[in-house]
Amino acid sequence: MLFCGIMLNIYTATSSDYPLIQKIAHETWPDTFGAILSKEQISYMLEMMYSTAALTEQTSVKGHQFLLVKDETKHLGYASFELNYKGLSKTKIHKIYILPEAQGKGVGKLLMNTITGIAKENNNDTLSLNVNRDNSAFAFYQNIGFEKVGEENIDIGDGFLMEDFIMDKKLV
Ligand SMILES: CC(C)(COP(=O)(O)OP(=O)(O)OC[C@H]1O[C@@H](n2cnc3c(N)ncnc32)[C@H](O)[C@@H]1OP(=O)(O)O)[C@@H](O)C(=O)NCCC(=O)NCCS
Image (cartoon, rainbow, N blue to C red; front, top):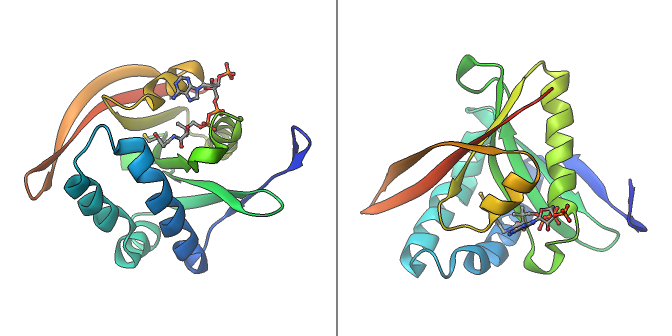
């Protein structure tokens, strides 16, 4: 698709794309969480969520689907989501990360719009996600119509917690 004069391509990732997803995660996480989480927690979470074994389990067992977005020269980011989350007509967005240099240009919104289209095609009526309570992405989600519906602290082991807001968006 042509986007602000740039050709962007969004496609469903396969296992051969795992190295790309891992590379973008390792480039984006320190920038996103460096001021919020300890280095140790960032390393721990990257391993927990992005090792090849973890990505394989997410896609093969848990039903997560990954989208990658690229321009003419390089990959800019990825998102993952799960339709019919917990048996409900809800799509859970598990991940959305855009490379630091590509942020603020509408790419995240475009990925979210793509997920919205897929959710609607599958008769899901709500998008849901968790965001760290100190992550400025909270304002991005508000900007595109999400509302805070709760908060939770998730114990992820090794003494680390994820301290999140839960946000939902009703699809009409
Ligand atoms: C959060 C993220 C996915 C947003 O994607 P993006 O491509 O940077 O955002 P967009 O350019 O599509 O922004 C869409 C709108 O949200 C606003 N917005 C984006 N990020 C924002 C932020 N951090 N704070 C406030 N507003 C923000 C933009 O100004 C824009 O507003 P407009 O449409 O009124 O002009 C991206 O910045 C990112 O990957 N951040 C780091 C990783 C991260 O935090 N991921 C979420 C983990 S839960």
